[in-house]
Image 1 (spheres, helix red, strand yellow):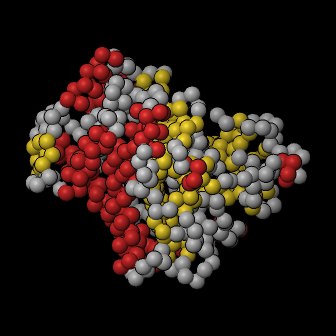
Image 2: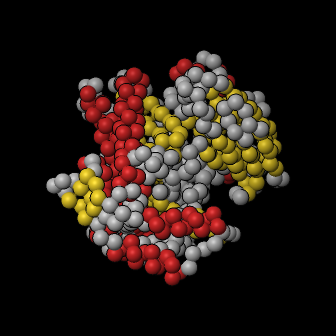
Image 3: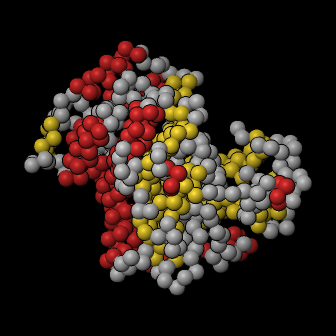
Length: 501
């Protein structure tokens, strides 16, 4: 379970690629919802779309294979079946993950734990009942989890545990799956003879791993602010070189007990939602490591987390405390790249939008149970009243080669747009739910003047329907809200103009 830095509406699932014009390789982007309970985004730098699609397909196949082993949400998975027994011989993959859980628990002095299932379920029940469990009860459960005797026997790949004890490996499994899926993608590329002439950025719900180069450069990954919109400009941009990043923190997976909201990260020390941080981002050589440490650093305290990062090679972190203070490890600054926006004065705009005003758009892609269902390619953009492009807000989905001659965006705009980053790091989000924001800047980073604009939203599927809607935006000193009813491809669209809300 992960999150991002001011990221409530995070751009971490939004992949925007600056397409290369070289003869050797081009960047192709893919998007799919409902993968590991969240979103899947991938950028593949390869000579052609056929090779990129094969890399993507084999990456997804590995994810699906491992999901059958490691998903705690599926009653038919291997981990779920183990949880129903007291002793069992398990697959090498499950044994490795369980062993890694115990190793990271030892390395972090108990700040990371895969023994939290009973506590997690206790807090989930508290959400339903709107009644907070007592401190005494949660402390007892935390001590019980720590004291549980578990035996992992490597020679026989067997696990022995109390029959009423359940593992919860969600804090590490996604990172492990990302690592293995990235390896599958690399094998696919090498099997096609690509050797070093390819690059991959794999993003599952905001946890990201990078291999090779994208457009002949190292991948740029943006970190969104706490509770930021899915397409918000990143508060920081990192340049990753065969590295991974995971972010944990406040967001859509927070617990809500009665009128109070809590972090979804439960402290192994107290059995209660952690109160120390808003968001933690960790860069590490492997996604498994980044995943586990982003959770551990959220509970162990800033000083201890920074000390850990500063004494472990390849680990860097940025921590935003509950009070909003920002702390980074010693070499975090070596990863960062600067992003720049123009001021109204620099752009020569006399009447920009009021300070703090933006256009917020919330929409959902419903899951449709059709045998040949393909997730829609969604494009959201803003034009002036003469249909001239002002800002491309998001393009998600598979590379839409088949729609370029047919639909509104490609007919009217008909070109690809440069992007500042390959992907954005964020906390995990509910599948199919998107929140976008237009901050009042155009495609070149200039603030726009007040006036009328048109918001365009288009969704289309290769084996299905097409939906195109537009809404006039009157951007001035007054706030407004608009609702676009559900259609064939998109759920209800809510639009709000005003200060961030």
